[in-house]
Length: 207
Ligand code: GRF
Image (cartoon, rainbow, N blue to C red; front, side, top):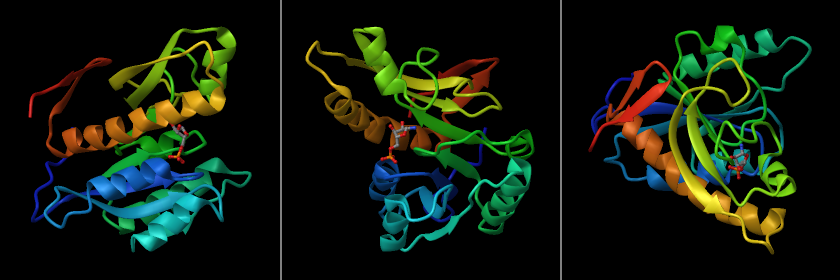
């Protein structure tokens, strides 16, 4: 699906963010060693002034702001060109709020982390929606990005129990803990060429 990264020539990853960037931080920490087969080379935010940009700055990673104007396709063309100029081979959406245009996704591999067990509770309020629905189990999904809303093929999922005393804050804390493990694991599996796609079904090959 993607070029295999090596220590000598790591897979070049661009991370798209919109907020606090705790998932970005998990990726930065996971792939910090110089011998890593993954290198985060660019961070692009859809919002200015967010903590994720400060995290990129502290880690010495090139970063930029790409706010969506009236023409999303035009913004995505600028974003794509900026990532291409940095040799990005895999795009990781880590708390990125927005839908990428077909022109951006053509010829690119992108993955997203989502705080529910898709296809349940897509969209921007998945944690609150699962609670309000009265679900007893929710979780985390990492999936390939397609043109829809949280609709691409699922790569990995992990469940999180909803306790009867949970509120959005306590549930979010446990979900984020799972995200911070699953997202770097998935990026590593892609960099090791261990993910195969058969229609919508993803096969995860052993390490
Ligand atoms: C995460 O829960 C992610 O699943 C969702 O937005 C949140 C981003 O958190 N799409 P952070 O910016 O990585 O801290």
